[in-house]
Amino acid sequence: MTSDEVQKLIATVENNIASVVFGKKNVIRQCLVALLAGEHILLEDVPGLGKTLLARAIAKSINGDFHRLQFTPDLLPADITGSSIYNADTREFQFVPGPIFANVFLADEINRTTPRTQSAMLEAMNECQVSAEGQTYPLPQPFLVVATENPVEFEGTYPLPESQLDRFLLRISVGYPDRESELQVLKSHRFGQPIDAMTPVLSCEQVLELQESVKQVKVNDAIDHYILDIVEITRRSEDLYVGVSTRGAIAFSHAVQAYALIEGRDYAIPDDVKTLAVPVLAHRVMAKTYSHTNQRQAVEGLIAHLVDGVAVPT
Image (cartoon, rainbow, N blue to C red; front, side):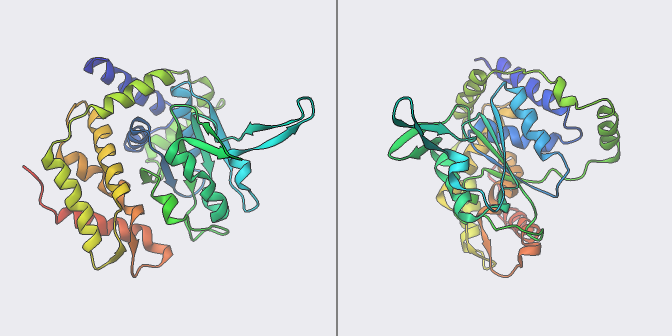
């Protein structure tokens, strides 16, 4: 796939999603970073701001299978991954895949279910497979988890386990739209749901080709050291008692490659690193002094401050 073909495909899918998700170019671009890097997205925000719409628009744009599961306190791990059911005709147990067997899986309000059930997704998110009763079942490719999360101060929420947070490439917020964009939303929903008229602009095979193109983006030693300098400073910060893991550093590098490709380059630059530092790293660290209520905003501010103190390669 040539560079021009790559850019045309990326622009096409970005514009297609933007045709129903108004005024959220940066959010759409960050979601595409996760898709092209082969990673996953955590959307944290109050209900009703278009998180589900965004996940559906991504699935429709790439002509992928889309499954949505509402996470509730009584949800069991098998409700996500699937289970074996006895088949009376064959007199054997047969594995019935759960809703996670999709190209885009929306885990809606993931922090309303228990940590045990949340943990059932770890293998799927990390290895793109599900193990059940000694058998391994591969998940469809591409595979993207879009998890929505209510703020922790909302009623009936459980904090996500740190090991699961580390599997999400980015944590982002959709946020309230500006006045002009919200006016577009009102007008577009007057006669129904605009997403119902969406048509695919990419195939899953083309997404896989784009993921391969991401791997070819060049990251020189100076950028690698810049990434590691930022990772190291989170480990030495007096305000954090858990810094970014090695898995987090690898994910950071992959995100930088994907962002560079989306920006139309086959090489990474320091601005790619600075742009992604907060959404990629803030959920991977643990602060010493902040309460749950304001931890996210405080930690994101701290990460931004730490990044500003790291020398930028020239």
